[in-house]
View 1 (cartoon, rainbow over the protein chains, first blue to last red):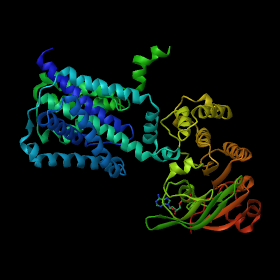
View 2 (view 1 turned 45 degrees about the horizontal axis):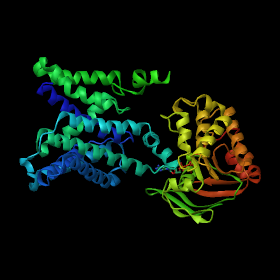
View 3 (view 1 turned 30 degrees about the vertical axis):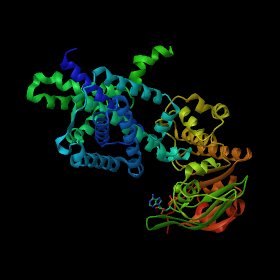
Length: 278
Length: 242
Ligand SMILES: Nc1ncnc2c1ncn2[C@@H]1O[C@H](COP(=O)(O)OP(=O)(O)O)[C@@H](O)[C@H]1O
Ligand SMILES: [Mg+2]
């Protein structure tokens, strides 16, 4: 594989993880526009551990994921009282808060950024992407998923069958935060240099976009969305200055024809399960 | 079984329920009737643990904590809310499966789901369709079936006949009577007072957040004030809060 494509596939893997972090939270009906904040936390914590503490990367990523999950849970308790657009704005605020904290955090380079990480292989990125994807597919087949969907569907009804909806939502938020942190840690060790600007609002939007485009009702949608989001602008290069406009038009067209995104359960079933059931 | 004393519920500055006392004894069907906006929904939501309130609600002699629906359910108190509260984007079977969420006896719970399918053949027929796609009457059956799967001892029903055709309404009332015969205690909120008083043992009439009349259902059905207010038409009259 050329380094050009290796770079693209690494970007896809990192975006895939970010998209999955949004997907998990979205499964309970909550839209987070602040996952780049968790990604940033993951990037900085993991980089600090590998560069300054000489931790192995895998251990650093796990620690970063746990740290982000803890922060996600602490932030989630008050934030998840909010619903819909108010929650979206609150998470956006959280993301910006993290970014400006990192800007002023001189211990980790502040606005100058941080470097010294060792470059990580494409395979390693996808090992994480694949591993977390398998976790999500297992989750989608579990009883817990039914509970998450119930919370998404009607919180009062879910509450009335005995579900602690706060715990479900906060749990999903924490898990999403952890996955975003892994994405950040891998980003840091792929680009071997990070700065707070890497983890701004646009990144959070990219995550959401990948999920909405690829399919927001199945985990596999995240990989389709991440792939398209990275590859389409490349394939459209021949359009030169017009490529982003063309990309935007394509995006609108897809959403006009398939509101649920490209992949959904019926399409997935057609691709796989029908054979298994027959 | 259930004792409500001095119940008050506020929506911001609005006092929707203004000091209600209410008793439910085991094995009874208690009716809570009254016009639109009388505070019926607010009262049962408070009992089910969906809203904060002032006053005390004791169940089996133990005071309930406000706003803890999931705990109240585990104590044996299930609510079928106004509007049914089905999980519309989940299948009939998934709805029923969620009904057993609070139970630990998984094998027995699975058998209970099968029993529900026998009791409601229409639900079995449509077990794989989305709950949204059921008719109003089927949705109400599903909502009640799901509530029953938590094995409650006290079932709160908030206007189960709302929006149903007369024939379906009759079926729902028959179902409620049969639940009582099975030993369930029912607190039934309704606007269709005539039919409700027929199957209830005792009734409370609510008006603007207060109990204005209570007693044996048969007596209330014969009361002149009551009949002027509610029983005039064959169906439920709409009365606004004064
Ligand atoms: N969510 C709410 N916010 C503000 N006021 C409410 C709300 N729900 C109900 N109310 C008010 O509380 C009063 C009682 O309503 P409700 O309990 O729904 O009556 P009922 O079920 O008897 O029709 C009404 O005046 C209604 O307008
Ligand atoms: Mg009502």
